[in-house]
Image (cartoon, rainbow, N blue to C red; front, side):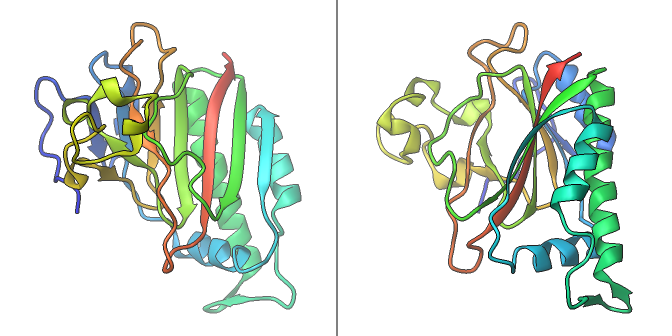
Length: 234
């Protein structure tokens, strides 16, 4: 179990809320991660659950405006499964429409928040930890959201040992020199949450990028569907 984070105090580098407006707090100098906590719509969850039952691996890497990205997403992700999969009284076509609308909403928010014309998008199904060691990103800002499975883990700055980054200690916990003194210090996002992670290239943020890693898959949750988005042109 993670340490329960309390109200923001001086020195905290995170902002978390169920109001999407919390994402704008990433512009505050002290904030390195902002998380919009949310519950995915049932239609979206059902569509993604059925999608990941298929043996197909998804590894999508695109760049473009939100509208251009959505054209490709709708081409890659099926509008329906055959035979049709019922979601209550609704078909999987409804679930696909909800999934498309949700991703477009997230991409559009990201583009609007940073006045960006071109975004870099990745959508991946994963059965292993892509980045198992705690690290920071060499970007200015990155959006991360998980539509299925275990979500990204991160460390508050005041509960981490940055000297361990880039060493074997970046994957160690509760030993001298480890990245964190306790497993309880590791914070875990939930599927559906949308986060903005400041990286090392954000102006004035060198040496303060949010520390995070991919979760290790479990027997109960062996797969993930992860979406990341970067700024390409603003």
